[in-house]
Length: 320
Picture 1 (cartoon, rainbow, N blue to C red):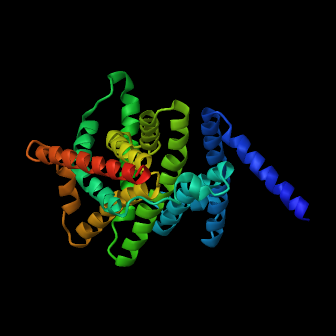
Picture 2: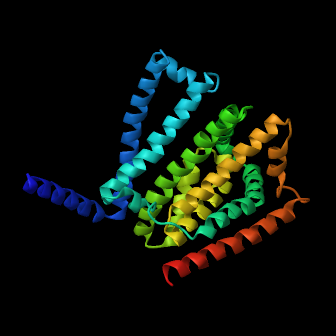
Picture 3: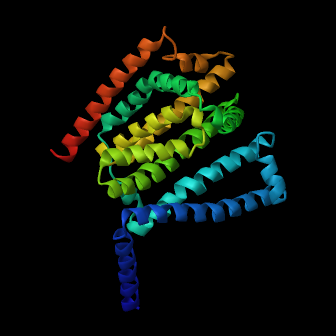
């Protein structure tokens, strides 16, 4: 019996050695195929189970998961989507490369404690910069020959905004905490698992260049959201998250920053909605016009200084 177990373990290690010896481009193709297959199977199965739980047919369930459908079904499908497209596939992919998938994607290392606060401050300083980039992004018009594509992009953006608003506009603390889980925590973890923990690692191996790897990953991170009118601000945030991982070697740092970005938006919308204010919209205006443009410059300066401090302090930790 012991010999059989030993042979099985040896086979597992050999399989992992084979996967690790693949060309980085092969790894990326494998990553995408496994994500796609896992998502098709697990999302379909999960939707079927939930449809039965709601006493519906599968087609009726999907009809009710849209903008005009049942809000509880919409929430359920959002959680299922995050789990089956990002979080679980990332761990599954990592398992093929390392017997400890958490170690492979960077969850077993910790950044310097002070840098978790610094990562939060980076997101705060980034707000006016992101707003300015969003204003620039929204002012870009495609050539007349591509007007059909541009109109489709605008329509997709509008639908995505309506779905987000339907989920965010809640008036109870119970639903606020549900939104923090569904919109802030799970996406922050799932997207960082896939993009920084898997894709960025393999892009850096492919290009043999950390900067190009970070940029390529941020580009895909922004593009996959299919919200092209906010492409550049999301690309900017993706670059920040990428460097936080490169410098710290810990996935927890970009997860904390990503969660902070999502959670602040969730809390601001909740507070504004409950108190009939426009605080969330007022903050989105900072850095977008001549009167507040200076805040964008100040934010960029403090963001750069904080990122530099994070880089230097993490380098000292790794190379004392």
